[in-house]
Amino acid sequence: MEAIEEGRRAYMARDFARARALWLPLAEAGNAEAQAWVGSLYANGDGVEADAAEAFAWYLRSAEGRNVPAQSNVGAMYAMGSGVPKDLGEAVRWLRRAARGGDANARFNLGVLYSQGNGVPRNHARAAAWYRKAAETGHYQSQARLGHMYMAGEGVKRDRVQAFLWLSLAARHGIGTALTALEAVVKEMSSDEKAEGMRLVGQWRGRAGGDADAPIDPVPA
Image (cartoon, rainbow, N blue to C red; front, side, top):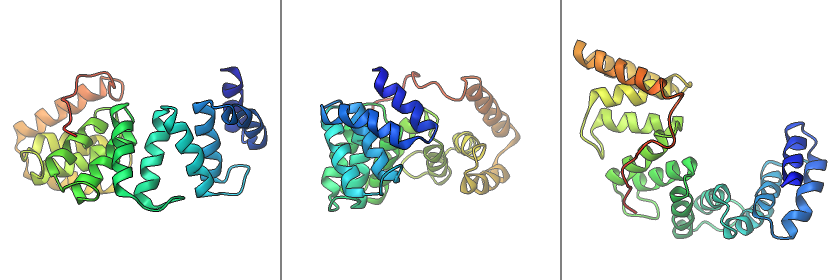
């Protein structure tokens, strides 16, 4: 819709008042994408006073309209108790919907919940599977978490080559903990393992930063 795109251009130009003027009528009329944008204005305090409760209300309307990023935000806000009373059951429900819709942040957050046992039984294998789903689409924090899990053999079979791959990808994007862990992994690797790790990193980079459409194993819910 042209008005939404015009609002996005205004937003990128930091003309938040114009962006809101374009989005708000559409949001009030039920447009899920506009509702998500209005939610982001209140979440970030862009052109309006920051208001987590108002942001949550708009995100929830958008999420109910099947907007995937809004579903992810609703899940995260339930998990944090931001703008709404903390409810891990609702957090998991919304994050699962968003994760299955392809949202990398939702997949990462589900991985965190499974690794900690918050709202779901603690399950490192499922945590690793969700991290991998997000890592495969280039989500740097998930790549770091997955690399650490391969390094420790937590939820996955210990594998220095896989640890090298994922930690290398995360470290290239400034994830400091990944760089530190990568240095430790390299010290343990044989020459053959290092060569294979470099080959995999090169292969990944040849996919233009990660192919979101690459086949990925299903994740248990």
